[in-house]
Length: 359
Image (cartoon, rainbow, N blue to C red):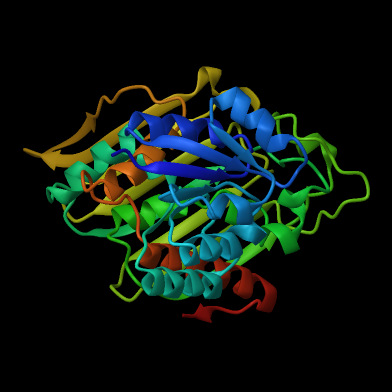
């Protein structure tokens, strides 16, 4: 019997969730959205059997085994817990929640319900990331002592006045939105437990329409824009490992860069995507490299991987189903999500107080 999935929310990520679930053999049987007519429209577009206008009605359907949550950040915790309490497994969009305390509530609810929760840290599923992780697991890099995580945009603010730029709904700005490379760096490092964090955020360009991203997200007149456009930080872990991070929607850089660079005791490495002009994918350049010393020479190994324009989104969704089917290990865990949100919380706290934060 195939796993039957319901989806909450009809945003742009639905196309990737649907493709990944179906690739892994699941059946999408329902979609729910509170906006009048939105679920019916999405059901017709994505060939989903039953649309619902309330989550309660969809969760009452006994045939649903798992639920995908694609909604603004503020509702991740409440809907994930509601699904768990209804006896469903959950695949939730990033970020896991607004903060670490909410992730702890999700973990407790999952344990109580004896159900699984995965989050869409899709960059872990990119071919470059998986290839690099294979080398790391084989011991090629040795111990990764330090890493640098970047997702920097030049003009990438996702509209003004909408939920992305409203702290109450999003939890923050660029850092909580583009947390992927911080997650990927910690993934490569073995997801160590954070100890101390110092960080700073900047909002110099957050009201400047010149820095709006290219995705066609409409501005909301009279809406709120009260989040950062960039964040910088430094994390030390209880293992002695360290991580620096730079995340932005709007900074004066040459082009959009998405990267993790690490330094190990046996080898260094880089996983990088340089986007095309103004953040578009049509001229993106992907790099996956290892740096080693061999026979007295500095050797750079280029790792060739298949192209992946969706940045692992389909593979990440497929992994959720494969994990539930017992065919694959999960790409992430709630405990890792907790550590990631502890780092993000601490960057924001340090930026607010001007002092280092101990976790």
